[in-house]
Length: 260
Length: 250
Image (cartoon, rainbow over all chains, first blue to last red; front, side, top):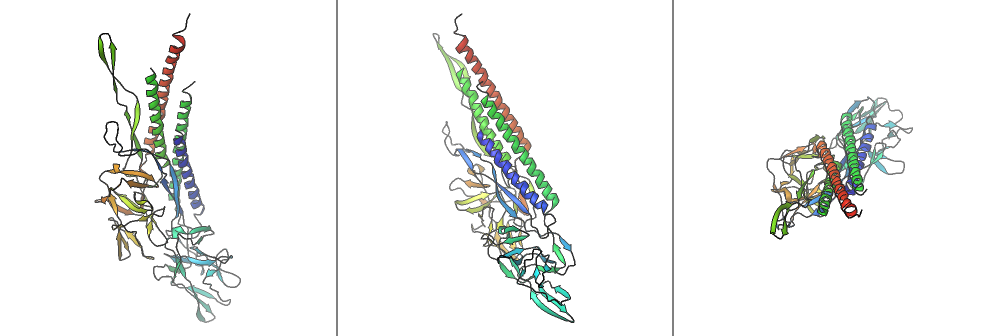
């Protein structure tokens, strides 16, 4: 009996996690380059009361045994790397990766992180940096007297100074065998893990890497309707598990009243 | 008299176990590819009772001894399909299971929520490898679009890849649930290649738990539990009379 109480409690816990993830997705519905997460549930282990194949009282083998499950758990929270919507900004340092790949940035502690958020800016020394001031790697420095920055689809950065146009850098993209295994660090940054594998680097538009589009931003890939539906499903599942706890409680009460 | 006490108690015990099963179903109402469990209860074998007196032995009829949980079966009907648009979310329309290599051996699953590991192999959320028709892990080609057709054939752009091994069993009763959406077969039983089932890319199969049905089961179970409690109380009252009132003098 107590089993049902704990089983239903695991159900409530799982659904609570689902609501946590959904609300984070919804909170980031307008975050550039944000990738939504999804909760995957799995059932917990089973307790075998009667093994299938054991002989019954008449000597025949029972075809199906008795196994009782212990509830559900969160198997994983998976980042979903589908593409978000595009937004035209006309800002020369807003970059969009059309397809596979991440930008690499250097954090202040000297480690690198990866991002899909291409809303870059210039800092005081002309370096191309993220909104948090983390420089893009390999570093690109835009000369002070540059008047026009153009970035082609293969990631070459050209600037116009006076009447001459010169190439000042090349944007590299990085990708992982298992992007869902990356560690989310907040601030739209991802860090490499053992599960994600080592980054492979390449030039945009080659070897399956996406092209770069200048003047566009990738928006969040969160779909509000989908999240709302997930929320309703999770809340109702939470509800129904609380009912199971209540029923189990009532049964315990009944048992308690056996002896008055 | 006392027999009735134990009969009612056996029914209370069975209803407890049924409640455990129902709450497991409800806890997994959102688990991908989960198949609900149902319970079958069975009466104990009836006994023939007779009266023996000076005229000899006379049969009176039979009497039951209560109820037991006969078996918990798994209902393998399909859950609803949910569109996710994720390239490595797969659902099987029709019969069949994905085969997975786990540290304990080959296991089967209906949960098609896959991703890649750091060696570009297709794995499930526990990291177990999805197997192809030769029983080997499926290697993907980095940077190429993965498309999976209805037969489970994987293509990487124009490059032809492996075919996912989808197997079915003649008798599902040989499968036992292991948790983590995995099924285990009895020793030595292997699945056959499935025919007529379709692999849907970008879809997941939801749980086949029907909330209304489970709620109805839950109400039935709790009420049956209460009824049997009343039976025990009634017997207890009668016993109380027999013990305390029948033999009382004046």
